[in-house]
Length: 512
Image (cartoon, rainbow, N blue to C red):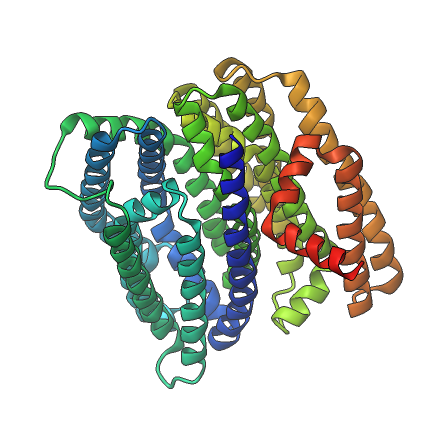
């Protein structure tokens, strides 16, 4: 367990470096792309992409199965079975890609040409970028087994490096379209597809060179395929609900509020994507160990990981979220210059959704570790699908988009409550301990740090002084709260092992 903790700390260091690069470059790239495309074309790209992402639940479902079974085989040290699982994972994703293309063509073309609110002058461009969006999606589907293999083996150094390469390539393509005389929207879709192809090749080559236990062999086993399909089928329920609810928001905003609202929603999604990348930086280091510890029947360590990840991941996301929530107009003006008027409220509403996900992620990872998905997936799907008619009704009766997004976040809170109660029956989760050690501390840390930071914004306004003062106060308040009551002794020791914390501590010691 000590070795595992050290590995987690080391991988967290790699992923932290990845996060810094991805967030900074990603946010600047979004600014360049928005300025190059304009509000209208940016909104068109997001709504057309939403059509493709409607089918993303299939990829996500099969990804969950691939990652889970690869990590499980590694945890049980089953080398021969690992090779078979890996080979069937590649076969399954190739089969899914072939089956999805005709469906995407038929459904997407009908929606784009006859249902969506796209200016007539841009219909041709929308159809072209849709074709490249399909190709990009297919590449991402086929890449999934290789990505899952790298994460299951916990090679986070390469994962961090390739993520940095990807965002740099996207920044490069954003600069290219800015200075190009070609249609910016079409060129952007083409270059995004080319970037996906380059990253795919890098993943494949790395897996071939590095992992001797994961070799593709000409192999077909219907039993493994059925196992994938069964697991993916139950996993797909929540993925369907997530995709339908999130992408329905994009479609509903287009119908009731127009493409400018889609641009505002697209900006908020860019922010949330970067925040989720930040969160993913930490949880990605833990997730393989959650599955492997369950496979190895190390149940005490399994529960320790769930509790620790829940709190620390929430605090990390809160650390970034508070300055954004309190200074959103200032941040947007610095980041984008001009921005849609509704973007600040949209971002603030969706951040609530992400904060709930941050401390619940270890619980649904634990569900995947057990392999018993049925009841959990049904419960979560019902709640998430209820959000769709609710959001439609709110927009239909003239409510603002921010109200619809707050309702969306509200349903996620309901999911969190139901999931936590169910975990008592699935993994024997101690509800009293969970509330005492996770829920109450994160509520206390949130209220104290948010209140302290808001005072500076209220006095200094939307200025650099207000932003820096509120950010510094949030960091200090969260750190103090964590040291006093937010983290256990064991969790404080883990934080102390993180490479960046060690470097800061050593630097401070030398100065002393």
